[in-house]
Length: 372
Image (cartoon, rainbow, N blue to C red):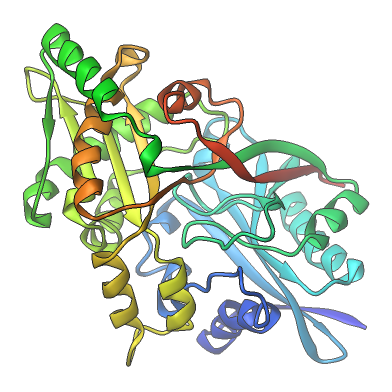
């Protein structure tokens, strides 16, 4: 018999967060989150997303044994745009279709209670959260910014008559594919034509005054994507504290115009995947040492965010960014570059990366279903 229990206290929340540690204990590809960070995500007093969203978390038990979990999310910024959907994320379960059905029925029920039209997932609160069920690439290690899942997740969703809503791809390329002569030549022309200049940083405190501009440009450059929900001012402050100070300052690049307005940005992160596996969800006593080591010695990096002002699309501005990154990544002896999930129909992204001969090595999808 399957029973569903709502998470109502800190003890239950910890159970919710730690369930995948049991489910994926034998997987060499799953990357665990930091437990304390994951719990803070659902702390309504610390995460400003709850100014604009509600979340209810549920656990599934079969014969009193924990077998699944799901987060049911209503983002009011969606509703304000006329997008009448209930989101679901943090979906994990054993290979039992009845467990998956029970969890998603809970999503359906809450969506109906709020008079919404359909559900979509797995997705988080915003575009900076993890997204999608992995549909190809199960034999590649995950990352700190993506969910990993077993192949049966997709089969369960299809069996329950969910249909594909959005398709994402993850790409990679060896650093040696980057032709510095090409980017150097193009960026010189672009800087001269549009009076642009790059900004590089060696200290986090130097870049902080520009971070609000970066998030404003993020909102502007991603606004046309169908899945987009803007980052609010409160969320900017939260992400500043949570993420920016964690990233090597040399791995954040800005391009400014002659009036010192930002026209492009890019954020690269060291791959923390193997360090997080070693940390096993805990920063102490030794987890943070693994993360610090990964931050200093990074053979693999992730291009986490990249954005260009719409009026500068197809004008070669990214050549300036790649030129700056080439020198930085060369100093770090980077070997592999990976790109976080991108919508397959994001043509602007295709243009950005066309000169590095990327290979698609993972695909993921979100699924949708009308509420019943």
